[in-house]
Image 1 (cartoon, one colour):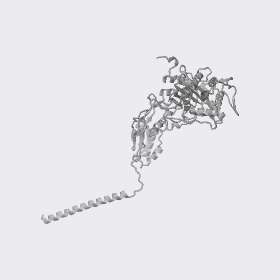
Image 2 (spheres, helix red, strand yellow):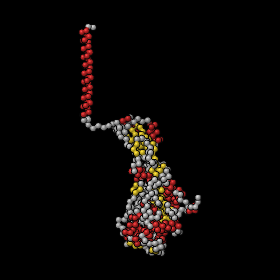
Image 3 (cartoon, rainbow, N blue to C red):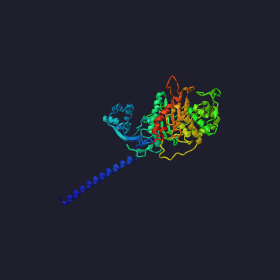
Image 4 (spheres, rainbow, N blue to C red):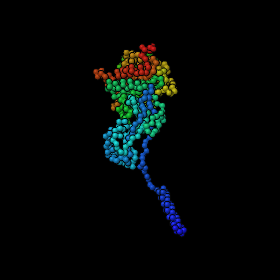
Length: 548
């Protein structure tokens, strides 16, 4: 090849290289321009079809009773979801899942799966292992599982009203569960992560709770009652050792606390409690120096207020001392004591005792007292024997603790006080008044004509007061629809525990005798409860007091 030919070939190669380089540069510029245009152009509203946010799940601490027994905990569970974009046949998926998972609405699921722009649809949270396996075995495309913590309750319905409930995201909605959330005791997590927080220790003793609930259920069956409630309260600290309301509720059933047939009768409602209120009337008369136990009142005639009269259910036919008024449960005598004190003094005393203002516990607010709109002479007299003022049984029991513990106020709590500072002691009654009330309550159980004699549990020195309150209804009070209650304490020589038993609308055990008063039902139920729980609580019968 000549020199001229070589030069021509080299020039041609250079031209081709320049052309290629120019083309690449142009292409790069074109792509860059397009990217700039797309980046600056208004694309209108867009919607991400990749995924929808998954709701947060929360890890919760264990709940234990006062002895460390677990009553609520988290376990790992499988939750089922679907990706509608990957579901091949939504009708098949909806029908097969509806047959596999009880209660699943196939039509609703079919509608949810129809929107293929969604990439996440919850189907069922917290599946049982057997349910998850059945779904897995279906082999349906577009379905998957997510591991999450699920709340379980080893004690079942035993503490349903107390523990409360959680929602599908494991957040507390009612009861102690709600209290834990409000106190910041839960943690948002991803996956089935167990909480490393210290367990929440209740004041409840699971053994005592079981005994009380069992006796209430037996009593409701025996007396064909529409409901029942029982409470055991530490007289010194206010710790609630047992709180049972029958019928119970299952904390795993959504909305169970809203069932009108199973209310929390201790904290969720207010009632006129009848003659157990006479304990407060007598304490008022003694504490304010208006009377002594031996002061006598003429109760032989009814008290008349216009067209209304206050009578005794079982008139004794003679004047009664304050001691006798309590033991015979005289309505006339209690009304006379209240009227002697007067409207203002009665209101001040009840306020000092803590019965006129709302209270709350860790389970939630206690139903507020229902006071009379007009507090006149008639109201003063009827409140004296337990009608005209409605209060939650839990609040009343806390007040009764002050009557037997030396006169100190207690605040009811569902949390064990072992890790807390001791409660502040506030004296609201003279110690002498408390001593007199302990004497009266014990006599009411030991004396042959005491209304609470059937509450005696041999050896455990039970004392207390019965009350049978007619329930209000259409047209006034219903004579055959009552709340029968016994409020008491044990052992009365040094009270450690306050006990309350209430039966709602009990029926006569013996149709021939026809009795529905508290002395015939609430009192013997109390005796049965004491016999079962005293050994659990370490209360020895008197005959064993000196044993090693």
